[in-house]
Length: 192
Image 1 (spheres, rainbow, N blue to C red):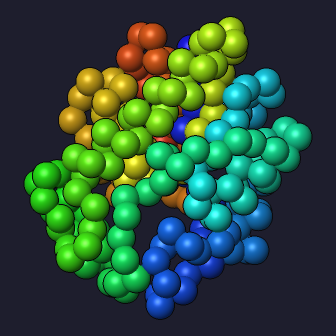
Image 2 (cartoon, rainbow, N blue to C red; image 1 turned 135 degrees about the vertical axis):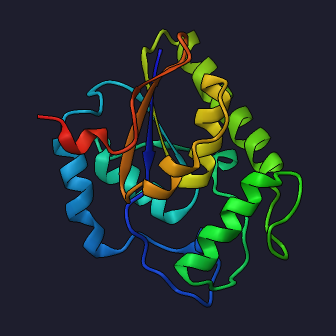
């Protein structure tokens, strides 16, 4: 089975609200259309998104018929409205990965909890697709969540360099049965 992970497009940022509530920035359409036109996404697949608005909107723009399901457990690490500079945010996320059982900042969900939640939700989707004899699944969601999921699926430590270089939107595909990355983050930009 091939699992396609898509990171959402650029959100419309409101530093006074949690990132989980942010919608997709209308200017993100071009990047999303570029991903859609790249040919890396399957025409026939089970499409499922995180419930967050920016992920749902990305999935609706990318899926062939404009629709997809959503699953609560695929959402990003829970973080309050706590605006940080890019450098501060990156440092806090790296601390989260270094100490996954701790909160890197007040009210941040520990990454050990995020990893279990996301892997469980993704596993339910993957198992449902197997039962339906579907060979491709597309999950649309978030950078930290997908970094943890890739780690769990391939049995390696989280790749923080890939997390830091991930774009919005971005794509990675995994052969779930072989437990290998088939197409790494960003590779779609070089696709013919």
